[in-house]
Amino acid sequence: MASSANEAPRHAHLATESEQTWLGIMGGGQLGRMFAHAAQAMGYKVAVLEPQADCPAGQVADRHIQAGYTDETALAELAALSVAVSTEFENVPAQSLAFLAGRSFVAPGAECVSVAQDRVREKQFFTRVAGHMGNGGVFPASHAVIAASSDLDRIDAKLLPGILKTARMGYDGKGQVRVKSMDDLRAAYAGMGGVACVLEKMLPLAYEISVLVARGVDGEAVVYPIAENVHRDGILFTTTVPSQNVSASIAERAQQAALAIVAELGYVGVLCIEFFVLQDGSLVVNEMAPRPHNSGHYTMDACVTSQFQQQARAMAQLPLGDVRQHSPTVMLNILGDVWFDESGREREPAWDKVLALRGAHLHLYGKAEARRGRKMGHVTFVGTTMEAVQANLRAACAILGIPV
Ligand code: ADP
Ligand code: MG
Image 1 (cartoon, helix red, strand yellow):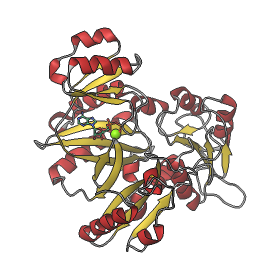
Image 2 (image 1 turned 90 degrees about the vertical axis):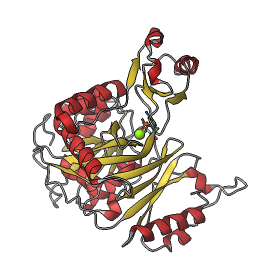
Image 3 (image 1 turned 60 degrees about the vertical axis):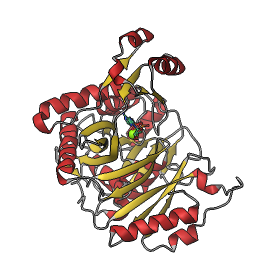
Image 4 (image 1 turned 180 degrees about the vertical axis):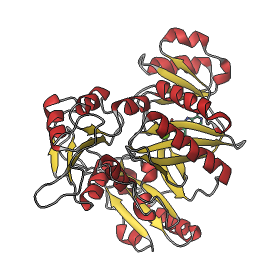
């Protein structure tokens, strides 16, 4: 059933009684779980490859191949089963995707994922795309690459205060240190253990946005509305759509940049790009995730086609779905913190009270243990007006003991 790299899968139609069509996912987290729900609703079987036994996606997948991400026997099994394979976390080893690509249709491709895995390559790539775009081009923050401690001697003081970020493996604010002086920078770099880093100038952010875009193998691309994101302690806190701050011209530039990025990458699947809007109104591109994204969870309840259904369509080489948003919305991330009361005792959050709020949708990821800072689920509020949605957000935060 497997087709070779970049060749159309021959059985990407929906399941019939005589034949089941499988889609494969590298990784067993919540993104894989929500993908599985969407793909199964369309009649697909879903296989996930994930080393952990009781994982969010493994609980709902039709098959859980429990093995390491580089286990070639397991990768071969996933590829043989699946007409297409995708990844739900961005640190999947690029060589594993390359291995799969020889045996199944892999979307997005290994090269796209590896650009997104490395902040140095990612920033070079963004700079190149911005250059091609001319006037409307969107550049990354001023930065310097620190590949070895000798590079510290050549750092331009204009980059301070700044943020030192590891080039690889960072997420949810991990692998980042804010530095004010050269001494801070030297100490922070030493603390990273000698890995390659990027020093970015600390920018005066007005607010943050993300753009979710999907591209099919035929080059057709669709772009969702601008999402406005608030982070707390480096972790996404809320996503509001439509953005309450973005102007039509910034929105247009961010969406055009997103379309140029997927075109340049020859990307297939869902991609999310984060941008900063600065206090002077300028737009800066931050980073991209080669998969559905936390800031796109709102699409499940507020858009015609969810980001997960869109990913299944792209993988199966079906037409992409309508991205139209039908309701104003706010998504609230639910971290493990809300399982603990003021005295630190663990208890179930009052979901009954949250769900009594009109237009609230609860999504929990099936994680057995609540830990502080761990993403356990999210609640999406939809309504007829943004005011009503925001009132419900505040009410839910009060119920859950989340400071607003
Ligand atoms: P992660 O991979 O952890 O999401 P990001 O690069 O997106 O890493 O950084 C996390 C958050 O830190 C951003 O959403 C933003 O709030 C803040 N941040 C990152 N870079 C800068 C910067 N150059 N200037 C100001 N704030 C920044
Ligand atoms: Mg980020």
